[in-house]
Image 1 (tube, rainbow, N blue to C red):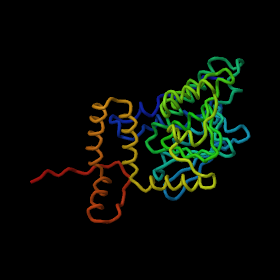
Image 2 (tube, rainbow, N blue to C red; image 1 turned 30 degrees about the vertical axis):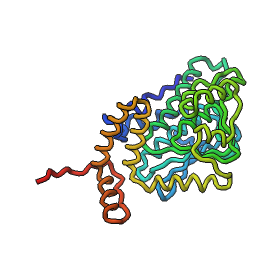
Image 3 (cartoon, helix red, strand yellow; image 1 turned 90 degrees about the horizontal axis):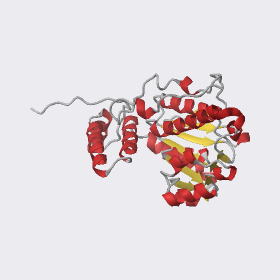
Image 4 (tube, helix red, strand yellow; image 1 turned 180 degrees about the horizontal axis):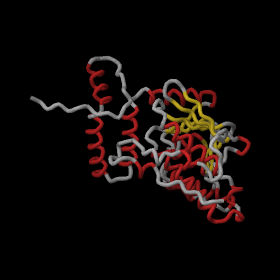
Length: 310
């Protein structure tokens, strides 16, 4: 199998300003996310459903294999994420799964010795690129989790901007059970939960409950299973009711400042607030507030023309 290379992450192809959520067409060419030799129309393992109010639902659809993040699954999901972002009407993406397992992580059959180190590296690099894609995509990505999320599946949950879980969901990094430490899942999980909690999960491989995941910060909300979809859609709808460029600018800047020291973070966010104020949608929102009416968003990355005071 040819070594899989997927180029730079979105963070490296954003325009000059970190808050400018416009991505080059070359970097978003869908074929970059296809597996070597995979046909362009093989998308049944990731289903897409667009809702009228600006929400796109992507469903992992391989329950027979516990929605494993095989090379094919990751390729299809990466393609679907990019295609959803490139749809102007989409303001929020929800990632969910068919069956009682959100995702069991990597397909271990692809990691046997016969496939060779080059294929193993290609798979782990593909996974890392996809996780970075989720975080760097300029619109929010919400994980809707019902059931078990383990290893790279837990990593996917940790990589999403928001995660809503049913009460019966569980989360684990169980690679140690098969002799494969969850080192790459640890990147996302270790940035979502306290260090010692992450270490316990990684060293023991034992799952934590949905309530523990909420307590530690791996998920943002826990709900009864029969209310999971409604809760997730309600949150997505609230986000989708806002201006797309404002949300995009906010996500990019939030992620950037979280890696900086306090003073640097304030410099970056101050610059962003100034740029945000210059957006047509921001001025529309301010005027709507003053005039006591609902704003009418353009959802376009357009700045107002500053008129000098006379």
